[in-house]
Amino acid sequence: MERSVSARLAFRTIANTKVAMAIAVARNSGYSSFDESLSVTAAGADVPLTEVPDHHGGRFHYMEFAEPTDVIVEYSATVCGRGVPEDASLAERIRYVRPSRYAESDRLLPTSYAEFEGVQGADLVHAVRNWVNGELRYVSGSSRGTDGAVETLLSRRGVCRDFAHLAIALLRSKDIPTRLAAVYAPGLSPMDFHAVAEAYVEGAWHVIDPTGLAPRESMLRITAGRDSSDTAFLSTVGGSLVLNQLRVNAVVNGELPAEDASRLVQLG
Image (cartoon, rainbow, N blue to C red; front, side, top):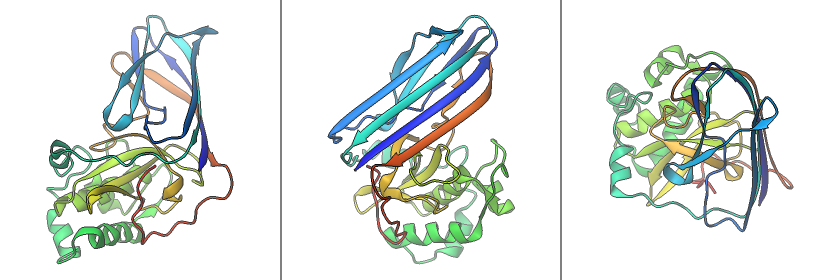
């Protein structure tokens, strides 16, 4: 499978701003070819970048701006083949079963046990995916950046990150290690960066998308972590910025794969 993705960001910083981006496709030794381009310019001049490795093949691109400036970011990548499935260390299986900032599995434990009593393993993963898909409405702009899984369940609506956080919390409540993955998602409409969950069952990480808005087999990982606090595409580590433009595109060469929510699928 050949997939082509791109992102364009435009933002303005204040003085002494330090920025970390996570927009590049995660590295994976299984791809048969991997071509990418990243340029960052400010006032027409190239901006020096530092690439910092993150978990699960992800990468931060770090930059500093001493003066207020307008910044343009252009990223593109063409990836052929399928990635090698990632194993999970014992440390990761411990980390991803714990409650986190946006996936309050401790608070949702009674809900999880009431809704999914006696369901385990892959059956539980499918049941949680379908339950979240049926209980929530996808409404663009309906949630705040501070909302976690509990707030999402109470409001019964959200965007992709909210769907993923609720699924993560419910699965962790029943002791299934689950993490959030930021991805490029061919077929997604409206097109944007996308958030999905990955659950560790049957000895491997399997992706679930409770929104059902894009086929999982064509998705490309950007990064992964405990929740969206680990996977933000743009953040400051000093100073501040205003995002003025975000444009994302993701396509496959040929037909999109058919999505079957009942299948176990790995990100590749």
